Every structure is written in C-alpha cells, then in structure tokens.
Length: 442
Image (cartoon, rainbow, N blue to C red; front, side, top):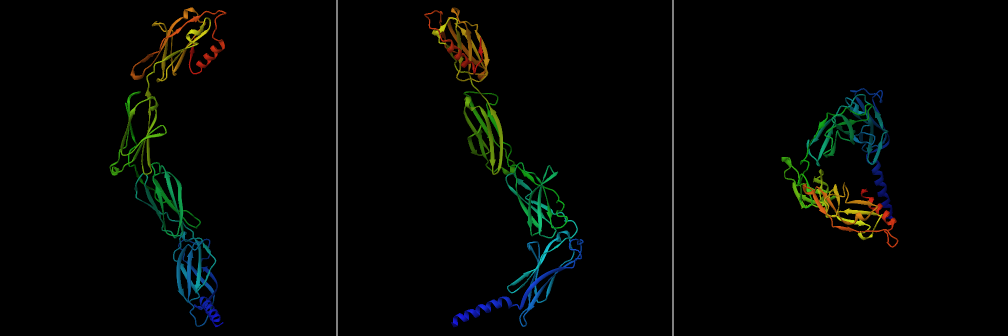
C-alpha cells in the first residue's frame, strides 16, 4: 500500500514539474507587426514583429520563456530565438525587400508547454534581384556530369528555377527546387545532344513571384573521340570469294588518349565482332550472304557514336539448268513447249540466251532481275526436233561471266488417236506457274 502511494506521489510531482518548473502557464500567443498595410509594405520599410503571450506566472518560480520567430508557411526558417522573463519579444527587419514577403509566426515555450501564433502574411513591394549562376566544371566530357549552382542575395525560403536555352535564345524550364538557403544546385548529365547554355531565376512569395534570369553561362562540351572511321576493303567492288575486311577505328583528342572504348561491328541487326580498343578489324571470305548494312559502333561510358556503310557483294552466275515442260519425249505436235533456264545464284541483272543445236544464233535472249527465264514455243512441229541449251551471264568479277547448261533433246510426236498427248490442262497450269516469277516470251 505504501509503495503504491509513493509511486503515485512521484508521478504527480513529475507531471507538476513538467508544467510548472518554469513558473509560467502559457494560455495563448499572438504576433503583431507595425505595418499599416500588411498587403502593401513599401520596399525599404522597417518592420517590427512582436510576439506576446497570455500567461499565468507562479510566484517564487522562474518565469523565463523561450521565444522563437519563424518564416515560411511550415516554419521553414528559424529567424530568432531568445530566452528571457519578459512578457513579449521582437524581431526587426531593418530594410524590407520583396523576398521578405511571406508567412511569419512565433512560438513560445516554457518547460514542456509550447504554443504558437496564427501565421501572418506580409507582402513587400519591389523586384527580386537576378541570381548568379555558376557551373563547375565548365569543361565537360560527353557522358560526365557537371553542377549548376544558383546563388541569390534574396531572403529564403526561395524556389530556384533552372533553365536551358536552345540556340542561345528560347529558354526551357528543366528543374525547380524549394530551398531554405540562398543557393541551390542541379546535377546535369551531359550528352552529345545536350543544350550548352543555361541560366536560373528565383521565385518568392511576393506580388512579383519570379526574378529576372541570371546571366547565361555556356558549358564547353568535349567529345573524347571522333565519329568512328569505317574502312571496307576492297573499297570499289566486292566479289564472292574476295577477302572482305572491315576496319573500325576512332581518333582521340590528346586529353583522352588513355581510354579504351568498346568497338562493335554490326551487320544488319547482329553484332559480329567486338573489341575494347581504339581500332578493330574483322575479315572473312565474302559470300552473297555478306551483303547488307554494316555499322561501326564506338561506346565509352554514355557516349555512343555510330557510322553506317552499305556492303554489296557481286556473285557470278552458277551453271544454269535447262528444263523442258513437258519433258523431251512427251512433246506433242501442235502443243506448247516451255524451256526453263534456271540458275541457283547470281547477282542481278542476269542475261539468259537460248540456243538450238550448235547454232551460234540465239533463239531468244532476255535480261532479268530473276534466277529463271522461260522460252515458250507455241504449236510445236517437226521443225522443233533437236537439241537445246541455254546460257546465263552477268558482269561479276569485273567482266562478263557466262555459264552454259546441258543439252536437252526434244522429240515432237505426231498427233494421232494412238498418241497420248500431254494434257492441255497440265500445259496451261505449268505455263502459268512458270510465269508467276519470270517473264514468258512467245
């Protein structure tokens, strides 16, 4: 029982000490100012803020009170704190300027008690001074960062606004931040396409909310290396079977000679060779599949540069094959004979020439961007009996390249009841199929 009573007395004494140790009970707090018109204070005026409280004092105990003056809607900046036993305290602005505009309030503390006044908004007429922008470092390598620092002589809290300028003319807002200091910083990542001129302004709470822009500052952007140099050999014309050599390199400015970029050679969309060096070489025996778009990509940190070249590989024609439709011993007098000359590969255009027997005078010649050509003979007769061949040629290897097919023997059968003619429907279907991707000639 005695232990319980002692604990209760200790608790009550502790609570009493928290509230009365300073001998002051704060009932309410008010803040006043000497401005005739809080919404239209002239620049240069003297402003006195007075913080006073309705308090109850206990005789024999200390009556000291802590007074705190704040600026900002959320008590952003502590302007003054002072402890004494007076009934009020003051904070004085000797010469008001536009950036003194804003919310003010005061707080009184005594022991564990804390009371604050309602906020007061003051508006000071005038203009905000333009801030000063500094950039460090001013010489920046593509891919690195630099720091933009905007400094103002105005009274915080302030909002700092950073601008970039396109072609030194039109400005674009890129970043803004509220600060309880008279400066703010912005980290800028520099790219090859980044704008190079910047400025800043400050914004307060007055009627003229934004200052004039600072002087424009221009950064000097340095590329660590040149655009990639792309060399392809042979340089004039590449033929199937040649040794195709692709060389990718970059040139460094003296300051960056020690770095090793990543060089990548890309064909169409596939990387075929990569090396960390200033120069790299890729070689192979050229085939038709090596034709396409090649890229030389140089990368270091966030710096990426690309050079593009087109590679064409000229391919000689392969030996053609002559295919008769219908086959040589199924040709019926009065029917249709299609001679198909086909190659498996060859660069366009390809010239196709059809011959009968060993005559040097061609039956037909045509130049196409196709791997097949057709010579069509309508109403065949006995005069069409004999051997046929075809030739295919193009200008690969810097000179005409001609290949000759095998001979095909055509024997025309007389049309008679006992003969089994090649069905006309099959002749028509075969002709149409052959003419879909080639040019048929009569």
